[in-house]
Length: 451
Image 1 (cartoon, rainbow, N blue to C red):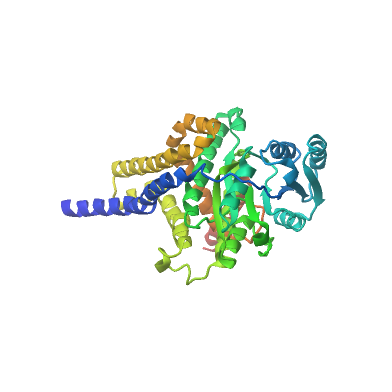
Image 2 (image 1 turned 90 degrees about the vertical axis):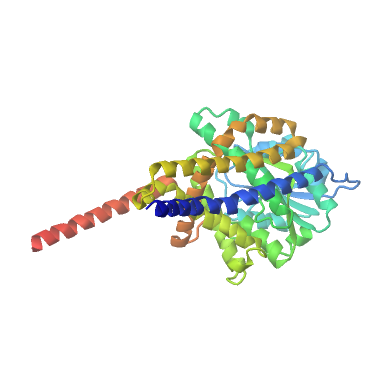
């Protein structure tokens, strides 16, 4: 009995902790070293004697509250105004977006701006604007964000310093001023964790992927292209919810191009409005990822034996296989106790796993604050919120749960840009539950009266 108990507990610890140790801790340790080395190269881009003309596309849909500040951030940019052409692509807005555009047009007359009306959909708006672009580089930003003043200059400098670079994504961070003004403690907690998530996703995750041209996706909020390379693509796919992922795959796999992150080009987006926005957003991202992989990768390429050759296989293991394990870990209380494992053992394992994830976040935290050394104000805010490292694993677990739901919905629901909200799905679940209960009672009633 004693020996069998030891074997059971040993099997538990191996299956429970070995997988996250291999697939999460070791890659994080490798990433910590890689980022530390790569971070030394920041700030060493050569200054340019010649600055090319750029085309800046801003797709707009009901953006009356944000479009003015977005354009103002372009006007405040260190890139020369006479070399920037702005195309505001309106895809069927029904608010006062055009009035706010006119206000910006009259105030920032040094900028060349034009407004075009397009059919509905962000991908269609971007494609229409691309045909009207004449800059050497084509850059697009979302209308609900603002550029850091050196972002455009740093993007162009990165292109000019690397002739093989075909496309870039900027670093996306949420607006810290909006976070500071948040009154609701719960919403502020959510937004602070989101800020750290974005910082780790771009200045850790994407920064590592960029080292070997393994960037999985450019950000739909801020991406830049060499014009000649972009025009060789099929432009943005209007049939997918993940047009940014699709474009990344087009350039890398169909055109054999190079895609990278520009850590020194920051774009600030509005933080989450509520938990429901997180729920729909992450499901949409998950669906877009699965659609792109399905379209561009075949079964042979995705074979497990290619785990060291194809980074997409490793990405799928992290985003899907490990994701399922995280959800299983959450259900440990319901599953493991009936199998004879002690509650104390399970609680200890939870604490160890939690501390492991906190340590991984700490490694990224150290590298990211080094990456932000050229942005003192941003770095100060980031470092001042160090205590978020304690709650970040819980936030990631929440996001993992939403991703898991997104995978299920992707398999059971037809593709659509609009994802059902959490409240709408709960209504459907309750409706189905009541329907099933009525069916059960009906069967019982018939059985009783038949007998």
